[in-house]
Image (tube, rainbow, N blue to C red; front, side):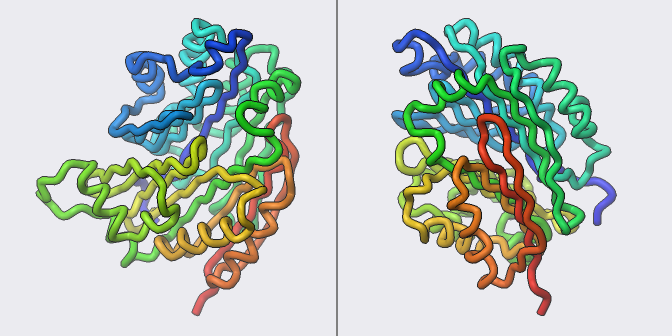
Length: 347
């Protein structure tokens, strides 16, 4: 293990808002000027490198991961030594000027590979929770913080949620019934070395990050994970890769890869519905594993229903990944979070 390197494990923040003006709700946060988003990202210490959007939301590839902006929801996911939680204050400021009020917050992350390299307020989960408690408005009075353990020492799951339940319910009922959606957050470490090399660029290749990114999407098989998705991809120099995919209207998938040997890492995240074909989760998981072949993998499933997480182990076991542990907890406004850890069966 390297003494220090690039931190692949992301921090993820999801904020939901509500407003009384239907005209505002229709576009909401998507009305924010690009300069305002840049100010938010400046506080986090990252920038936009590529973007794509559709009728429902805008997806930005960042210098450190991704940003998704919906009318009443924003998701920011950043890796490295970014200061993600510092985005909250400017976001609340800009949302207030749009007539929007925060009604729920969810912060999640795995276990950092290089925790001592993290700046304030990410020096520990305790510090993060204190910062969140002090920064969030008092109307978010239903709060919970938890570290979900696993039998794989390098993988645990940190979750903080805060909500005003009634208002959170109002915001989440548009455009879908809240309890049918799920979010899969997958963290993979110790990637197959041969496959990881595909995320390195050739020296002096004279390609833009967008062009090199499209090539990586093709040669790695990432384009097959969600066929038909509108993909916005970017390859970093000398290595590393990010992708946002827009799937079926308001759903997304996102992938981030830190391929360096010794601390290789990849993440995959997607949103789905419990009414999707039951084979969808299994097929996506199978394709993700085939792209990276990690030695260790954790899957966090967030859903009000218990229908999705049970499919995860049954999809991964035939691929040679054994479920080592499974933890479950309930969180205000988020529903159930199930955290499963897997390791590859040694030959």
